[in-house]
Length: 544
Image (cartoon, rainbow, N blue to C red):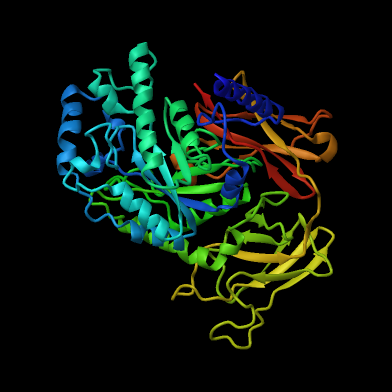
């Protein structure tokens, strides 16, 4: 009873804190959080992790688990009876995957111990629907844990308390919304998940990260924190926006799980992979906004990574090897970006300006950038990560030094792209400029809150507020908007359209009106502060 009272108190404290700070929680948020502060600090220092989605239905090349919802009796019966008979991921090589993940900048790997279908990748005593009852026979999870630790990476488990096999065996229709279980079955369901969690927490040594996906999750959380108090629970305790990144920087710990293609599990056909450059951009954007990227791959049915997935991880590895300093142990700058330059900073006073649009920046070409939010000091020094800015191949007389000049409008930096990374001299990925001993032009950035919308006789009225307007007083604001294609399609969306600049009322509110045809749209509010555009969160509206 005492333990439950503590949990209840924590629940109300978190709700009150969220309301006070106007934090918008997603559907993955927790009713309580017993993560230790040092573990959440570890996540904030960690640029990326690798997510591995794998399941017995990888043999079919279909969506992981979800095909069981609404499936016919025949399909369901064959799924649970036949698929384990032919599942043999004999080419699963966790050592190679872990070593590749480490090169790509990942600090931990999260593996799907059990997805919604209920198939367990460990030698569990709770069900025969597990990896040891397949031609593979071995405890695959143990192999994953050992290889990940040997590579020097932290071990993470994904676990779904939502279990379709449990429902099937209890003759309960498989659904994502089970609310009518009787008391006896509810208790049995919780006990089933508790026993599985106990096996995971006691049979594989120290587990660093737990990602809980689905309900009922409370028993899993309580059991995990009780048995491993130092475990970091991500989904189930902190913000984990899925397949998207926040529109604005967030001060509390968060991570975004994002697929390397469009699917969580390997999809052999009808798949569209993100390019290596897009994945690098996602990592940079996550770090600039104070979060971490959990990048998902899905092995083939035989356990091997698809060539397309490996190739993209290797491109990330090349970029990370050069620029790791700008991703590890960093925090957000006073603003996350200026136009197409993102920022991260160290507590030591080092700032990294990450030039995203570098595809057409030719090797040997000098470019100059004006950073409105940065001012230099008498000890300022600038450099480009990975290169010495003294020598460029085949051009011994070219001046490739780094230069800077303080102006009234900001710090002007001038650098040359002077390191050969690809044979064709066309390395398309971001260039990172390191600025030492600099400071922000303003101590506090505008906090822009995108508000709700109204429909007015065929027009859309969008509203927003600058929460700290009395202190900041930016002179103008506007809205960005574009058609909404869905979470997975974010990287392929159309460019943002903009309203005219709008006046801001004394209380910090502003409003814009646009005419839009029927459909779904995403929009966000922005404000301009000393020549820097600061963005609020994205919101979605639908016009019938």
